[in-house]
Amino acid sequence: EVNFQRGCLDAHNDLRQRYGVTPLIWSAELADMAHAWAVKLSDRGRILYPELPGQFLFSELRNLKFCHTRDRL
Image 1: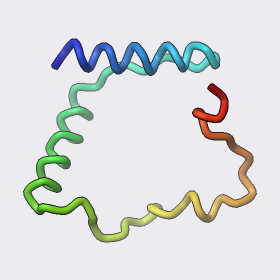
Image 2: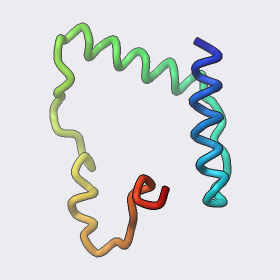
Image 3: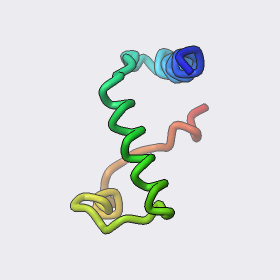
Image 4: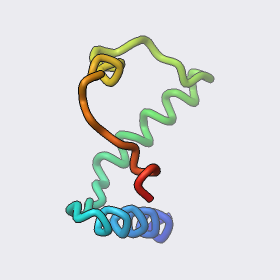
């Protein structure tokens, strides 16, 4: 599992480096929180959850200029 995590982080940071973006570091605390949330959703038997504040913020940012990373690769 540690090798998989390291490989994912390294691959992600390689792409970030191509675009001059600072590398990310692994956070065991955030990984544990994400795992706990995934287990909770799995126990529910569904991924859907109530709408959260800010969930649809992207749809409100129509005037913001952006591009998807995959479009730049």
